Every structure is written in structure tokens, then in C-alpha cells.
Image (tube, rainbow, N blue to C red; front, side, top):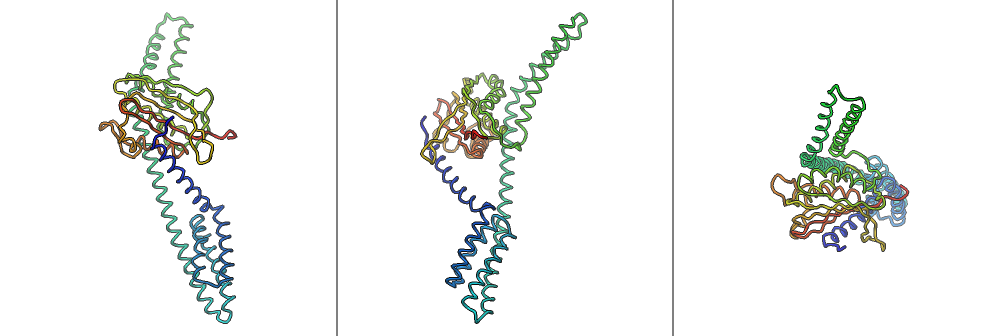
Length: 378
């Protein structure tokens, strides 16, 4: 399959970002930050003792103090600052034995600089954490709003889906009022009513699961089952638009570790976009598969994939690089929020995957959601 320049650029950017996050995360994790800081503290202390260059090593001591303060907080950072000041005092005493007051003055200045650094870094850390919490809350609110928007678009199909079993229940209930029915016939009618009531409960449960917040932890799921459930949820919506959904499952299970409601939101959004693109009707194909993509290492990485292909109007080449931007939409006013694809892209990226797109005007669009396969031991 041909890889578009947009996919190559996204893949390269993701590799750089992942490497940068891995390096920063290694240093800033509490279990690594303290050993690294203590090792640097010993190294700088020995060099300070051997050279007696106070100003340079006062600045260098900011490195371990900053690492511990940022990853563990102000109290551990203050302890490291005290250790650094003690190290500086030992080094200074070895050089200025005859002037201890000068040593104390120098070390008091060192301690003041380090404590100031601890206070400033702790305030910055608190501010960054607050901003991250607010950002996560805002993203979750956007995802929830888009999820509710999708439910609204499903209303027509759901009304039809609920109307059929309700009519069956109503008709069978009227028949049960007849005194001439045999017990066997009544038992059959009651079984039919129970079956239709279970069908209604299942539909309502699916909608509630889809509409609720995504607090569910990630778990091992089969992409075949998830894609099949999405098709069942949207089949009537497709029929009301004079469209058909063709589903092709993979021969074997496709295990991934994911948040099922979030992935169902992604697939539902991609399918609904495809149905909207086929205003005159048509066939939408949903395929579950296993695909490979180039990786940073020599061997290619294997992904679980769900491919959504429509026969719609396609996307203009000038719009293709912008389709994942928030609030960008080519739909008419009232038909879309411009958040669906950007939120879907964010969900897939949160799962360590990729969302690819290829399209040709008047020839349809193909979205491929790629998710890392779950380890066999998990």
C-alpha cells in the first residue's frame, strides 16, 4: 500500500516526540531521579574538592537539585540542596582552613541560591501540573461532547430500531388478551415478548456504554469484536441513508490493549463520516486486519488495523493536511462540529497508534486506524 507524505511526516514526528518523551521521562521519574541526582552530587563534590572552583560548582549543583525538585517535590529537593551545600563546605574548608568565616559566608550564599532554585522549580512544577490537569479535563470534555453529538446523529436509526420490537411487544400483548388462546400459544407469545424486551435492553445498554465517560481502564480486547459491535450499532443509520455496511473480519483474533468505549467512538465517527459523504447512497466497507508499518528498528512493526472505506465525494488535496485540525470541517453548518476527526486522532495517538487517511476527489476516502498488538503474555 502506498504511504502518503502526510503519513510519513506524522510517523517521523511521532518518532522524534516519543524519543524526547522517553529521555525526559527517564530522568524525571522519581525512582530514577534520586539515584541520578545523588550520582551527580558525588561527582560534582569530588570535582569541587579537587579544584576549589566554588562559583562553577554552585551552578552545577543546580542540576541534581533541579532533577529531584521537579520529579519529587520541594522537600526532597531541599534535602539535596542541603547535601550540596555540605559538599561545597567540605571542599571550601580544604582550601581556606585559616579563614572559616569566609567559608561560612560562601556556603551560606550557595545554600541561598539552591533554596531559591528549589522554591522556583517547585512553583513551576505545581503550575505545570495544574495546566496539565486542566488540559486533560478540557480534552475529556471535548471527547464527551463529540460522543454525545454522535449519539444525536444516531437518533433516527435508534428510533427505528426500538420501534420494531415495541410494535411486536404491543401486538403480542393484545393477542394474549384473547381467552381462546391455548397455553402453548400463550407461552410462545410470552417468549417473543421477553426476546424483544431483551433486544431493547441491549440497544439501550449499548448507547449508555457509548455515551458515558471514558473512565474505564484499558483492557485486552479483540478488534474483530469491536468493529462488529460498531457495525451493529450503525446498521440502521446506514439503511436510513440508503447505504450498506459491509464488514470483513480477520480470520484470527486481533488482540489490542485499549479503552473499548473510546475506540468505539473513533470507529463510529469514521463510519458516520463515510455515510455522510455518500449522499446518494452506496457501500461502506469496514475491514479488520493486521498490517505492518516501518519502525525505527530494522524490522517493521505489526499493528491491529480497522479500515473504513467509503464511496463518497472524497477530500480535496488542499484540505487533506488539515482534516485532523480542531474545528476544521468541510461539512455544511449544523452537520458537524469539526472536532470528530481531531478527537479520534488524539484517542488513537493516546493508544500509541496511528490514524492514516488517503482520499481522491469523487472516488472515496480510506481511513486506517492502527493500534499496537497486545503482547502475547498479557
